[in-house]
Length: 258
Image 1 (cartoon, rainbow, N blue to C red):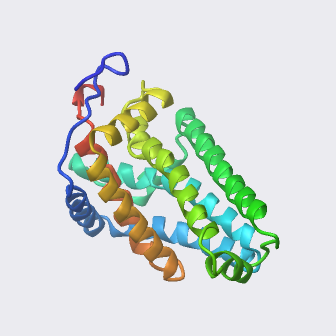
Image 2 (image 1 turned 30 degrees about the vertical axis):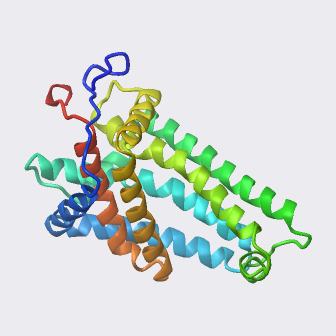
C-alpha cells in the first residue's frame, strides 16, 4: 500500500495484534547490549519529572502542567534511543555520545514537531482546567482537592467525563507521534506533515495492534511514574527502543534513502 504522493519510499505494513510484544523483546536485547545509554535516558527523565513534581507537589494544576511537560520531553528524549537501536541494527558500536549528537543535531523538523507537541499538550491542559472549573462550584487547588471534589464525588459524571476527554485528546496525539520522529530521523527529505500523515495511516491500518501498543505504553508509563519515578530508569529505555522496532515493523524500510 504505497502512496507516492506522500513519499516514494514509504509503505505502511499490516501487522498482527500482539506484535508489540516482539518489540519489547527486541528492546530488551538492545538494553543488554548498550545498558548505560538507556539508564542515562531514564535518569534524565526521572530527574526532570521528579524535580517538577517536587516543585509542584502542593499545587494540582502545576502537577498537570508537569505531566504536559513530560509528554513533550519523553518523545524528543527518545531520539537518542532510536539512534542507539539504529546503530545496533546496523552492527555498529553505540554509545551515549551518539545519543548526545542526535539531541544537538539541530534538525529543524524535530524542533517544529516539538513545538506542535507543546501546543497539543497546552491544549490538553487548558481543556482539563476549563472542564473542571466549569463543572465544579468549588475551585481545585491541591491534589487533595482533586481527589475529594472530582475523584470521590458521590455523583457520577465529572471524573468520568474528565477521563473521557483526556482519552479523546490523547488519541490524536498518539496517532500523530507513533512513528513520526523515527521517520524524520530516517528520511532527511521527509516533511513533518508527511511523517505525521504516515503515522496516521499506520494507526488506520492497524487499529487493534495500535490499541494493544497504546495499552502497553500506558501501563509502563503509570508503572514508571507510580514508583516515585524510579521505574523510569527501566521504562524509558524499554519503551524507547521498542518504539524504534515498532517503526521498523510498521513502515517499509528502503535502504536506498539512508
